[in-house]
Length: 277
Image (cartoon, rainbow, N blue to C red):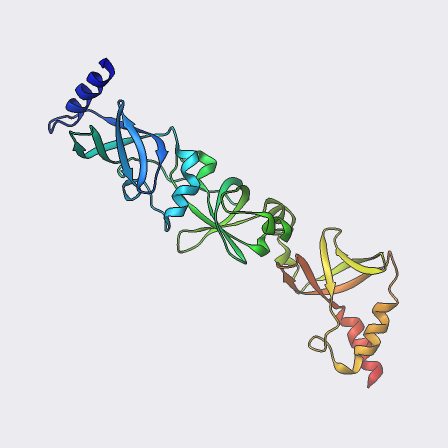
């Protein structure tokens, strides 16, 4: 009885038109309409559109809800019901500072949506939502191991590395190992340069390694070479032995396969072409 009297007294106090104190709403539950919260013990509801940030879908609120339970927000009382002693609340004006993301730094995120080739994530988890919300996106090809993309499910916590911010405001992210083994190494600086390539065999398969770091693909395509010398090139490649080191031109890069696309050294091509003449 005393508890109800206390709630009624508090309710009367904080719903007065001239009340000028600071009120805080503490979230304790989510339902289909928004977040249930208490203000000095008085229960109320914060509709989703009166939260400090917005989401494109209500399902995103459901994903992040477990991490918002127990948090308190600077609140305004928009309405009240004297029969139920319930409040209608807004925490939209709750202030927070947007987070500055750092290239190459990793952040804990929540997977909000998954398509065949992309994940939409919430990066605010990393700061425990003290900096509000920030969408991030990561492509299947920004996973070093695509199986890690396949295993990721909506609602999962996942650690991703920041790459850039799009004009839309979304962050582009990648798997941490993709950053350290690919983007951080700046493979684009190799394009149109001559590199040493180590040849190796494993289980009858030939592999190419550039600077003991990048995997290489030595393609013998008629798009890249004169049709007249393709046969001799194929013979040359077939005769390469485990442990050989050859010189190649870096023709391009494939971030999808994490490979350096290699082309036979121009001097060897010129030699073969001269033999044909």
